[in-house]
Image (cartoon, rainbow, N blue to C red; front, side):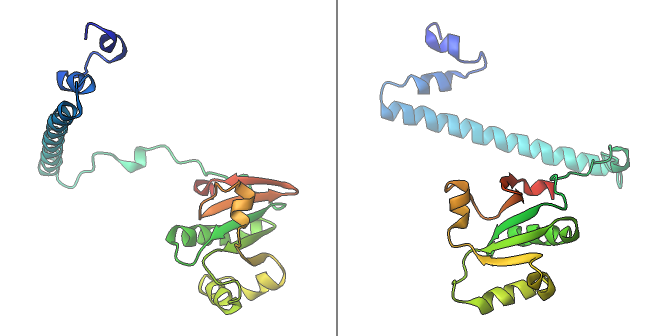
Length: 189
């Protein structure tokens, strides 16, 4: 601790950590790492045991009373994605994706507030139109929406990678406003 370690490490660094960082060989490093892991594991067990005792004490001392009164919390402001009637939303999804299904449900609730939804399905054979129709029916997509192009159903076929430079993951939401395309946060729907 008299050298560089003392100047770059916090004052709370333990002797075991210092010895492990400055171990002379792999066996010594492994020995200190095991000592540190054991100490941290035991400490976590003590913390969790105290937390359980604290929760139990609260239930016993104040039965039926919540620690936090939700009615006293500030109202959450409604989040917005900035979607308007001129916007189309692109949803990249796949049939076996629960988070995707939740996003689709939230998005369909806003169908009348936006220009439309373009759904890109991954994980379905591009020759299997029936699977797409079945998927759409299961998710409450009205045939009228598809006929009027309020909703389009597309095979993903690499579109997500092309639009995100290979960085996109399913599910992904994007907003198309004119020629501009922007990734949307699912939290804002």
